[in-house]
Image 1 (cartoon, rainbow, N blue to C red):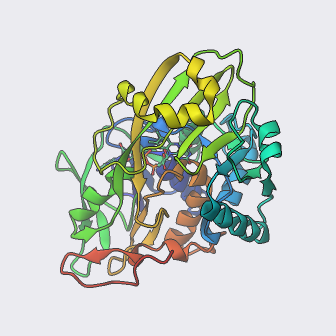
Image 2 (cartoon, rainbow, N blue to C red):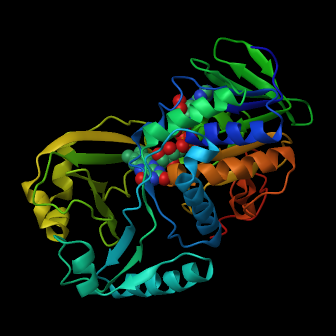
Length: 386
Ligand SMILES: Cc1cc2nc3c(=O)[nH]c(=O)nc-3n(C[C@H](O)[C@H](O)[C@H](O)COP(=O)(O)OP(=O)(O)OC[C@H]3O[C@@H](n4cnc5c(N)ncnc54)[C@H](O)[C@@H]3O)c2cc1C
């Protein structure tokens, strides 16, 4: 591996999207992705592929709208087919306070360009046959949202990167980022001791971002949280297409997937851990809450259980931008369970930031300075903007 002008650490959907967009802006020159295992084998391989535009902040909405547009026109932009299907995305609640938040949120999202509608309980019953709706107060529904296939999207992006001249190296674990005496990024050191130079380094290591930044004394609050997903066998009694539906009161969600159902959630309050092993017996913890909302799932044989790490930040927003005091060192991570759906837009934003080009979305609210602190305890910026 020779020196590169840009090194991107991490070959997940975020690193690949960034590399692809950077190659468009930098005339394909000197973009290298370093991935410690196989490209796409990290958290991205565990995502269920939900794509939504309902968010509580304008920044996330803008990223989501731009990303969804690119998922819809994927083939012309990247080639390949991520199998994006607009099954719709629905949040429901039976709680007054949550209903009030949903109403206000929908009003704001409409101002930002999201086509979100409020659904009454009878409308909810028609939209999701088989869901218990008697206790529900309302739902917010975005018909044009949906799901895509993370594996198909990643392999399409990998091919697009290679065609665009990006150098992708697997089995290349970065041990530390190299800085000059002024703190500017100069490259990386690999686990085998190889040093590589670059004038910009982008850390896109998903849930493993904090340990790498800790090697240069930065503490970024991106915490790994176990998330488990279940897929049932064929369910003839289940409607063939129901939206990705999230019960906000329990955090449980489900959606149809061919003749089967995929469900999960309800595990938001777990302690941070890098253990991403599947624990099929945990399905028992979902028991009553799941059965109350979707009684049909009681008939469901579970054929697959898988788990991964969601990369959570204290404000559930990604960390995107150049580290204060470290010119040329960028972070794109911590998307808090939204990284798959936001990746196309994040790639564009990161490439713009790292090349000094105009960004399609103002992502200044995601700047790492909002909660990064150097280990000497210096505050570098205001904390928690949301
Ligand atoms: C069960 C589950 C369901 C999810 N469902 C959804 C969903 O429906 N919709 C959605 O938008 N998001 C979802 N997510 C979140 C989504 O998967 C992530 O936000 C997204 O994949 C993050 O992509 P990434 O590229 O940042 O991280 P990753 O895909 O984890 O990529 C980071 C890469 O960096 C590599 N790496 C780490 N350290 C080093 C190092 N030192 N040197 C070199 N390489 C390194 C890793 O091997 C990895 O491949 C889900 C997550 C889970 C766990």
